[in-house]
Length: 255
Image: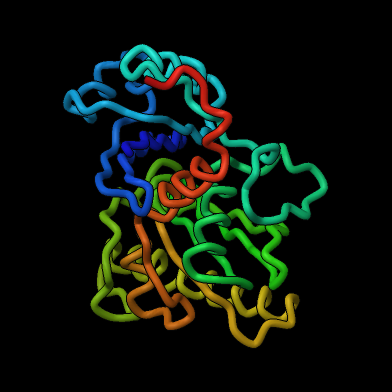
């Protein structure tokens, strides 16, 4: 079985090719390109047949064109991830349609692959926290500015702060502007994550939480943050795989 998994994000669209048990391949394409021309689908698949497809999108204007490109290239009408699907976990949230599709996929992957209660910390354009309680219910989360967004904002809105490459600082005392900015970004975000996780643990009355990180800066920030047990860069795609398998009877137009 070949499953095409598509996670449309604000900056990049993440592609996955999965068998029934795991994601086998992954690639990225800029979302602006993904919604304008469809050659990326064929390049990623390299003539391999696809049995089904699923799309998670947080960019509504990109969803329809991407779905058309997928159907044209594969003959499959993709399942669109929404809270109405059978997720295998509960959703205890006042307005479920407001939950980002990628966040639902993260919550499903967390519950199935790591257990509950737990938290996914996703380092995307924003840093998001998605929380699953002990009853395997998605109950909400936290959204903070992403590292790249924060450092870019400082560069663009101050006269003398440069654009920096975020990496591990050598010290906690900056000897120049770039090093000082790196310290603020890396150690600052570790502090933010540590504090939010402590508050979540307290509110859930959970002495232990399964905390999994994913996304661009996950490896860097988790390196010295013992609260994060695992880093899984395929977490969202694995969630899409699991959701597709639970809803495969809904697929239409497969080969």
